[in-house]
Image 1 (cartoon, helix red, strand yellow):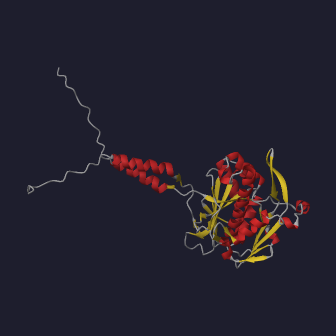
Image 2 (cartoon, each protein chain N blue to C red):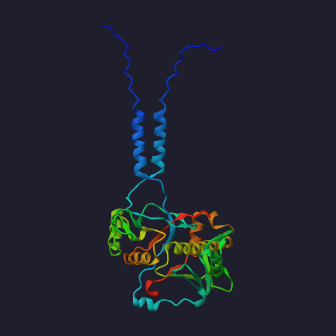
Image 3 (cartoon, each protein chain N blue to C red):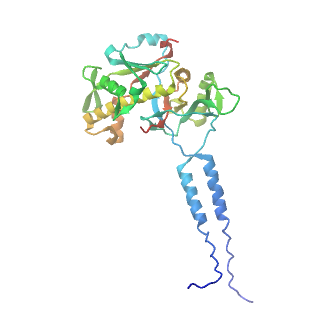
Length: 198
Length: 147
């Protein structure tokens, strides 16, 4: 019997590229690359009437009223700001500087000693920003105002972080950042719609 | 002087083509995520500086934007879970979404993708419904602002 060494036939791989292309195109079509990003807020629970009356009255000096009119004019406290005041020059805008002053200024909002972690405490502002907007206000300007408010709180967080840990907020580790976040929450209260003149 | 002769250009080897394509394929598989809902409205996102990346897990999107389909009019519409809905439907749909994901509403984050031309009144209506549905964690979706 003739013994012949037989070579196994090679699989033709010329269509491999086509298959891979097909898969590639499938994934290109069905997937997205965008990451969701946004500004986080927590809504207050709906208060019933009884609760509303029991609501602790906040001290006048601890509340900063921010009103956005439908034309985009912004009242912060008693001062009027224009949409252009939301633009940043350098690190801050004119508006966020005012909000930061409200939070950090010695003669503005009340400061209360708060434990950041056992053994470390800081004087932290009790200030709350109350944001109201007309129903006809454009969302774009509303979000920009929110942006500047968040910025002011973030800068304030940075200041507290330097006080407590001696370094800026972004250099903190997970636990430290959590502590600061808890001690300095972004207190922006979005007004109840029935507060507004419809 | 160069020799004159009929020279044939050798065929380019395509044996590494599958490798290249597979590499691309793996890159896209790793870097992208599956599209879970088809958008029915277009939203031109506002821009903001102070935004953070949101965790995909437990994220529910609510769009407020221009309907893509013609004949729906010019008014901005709300989209939640693959369908255009009214403000009054939001409570039910949010509960549906949480049941589908098997997560409690308190652990979910409602991402509001609102067109920048929308009015705050419309947004407030949606937020009120979310409060009634006891979904308190929200985020305002925005693009990163560069200047």
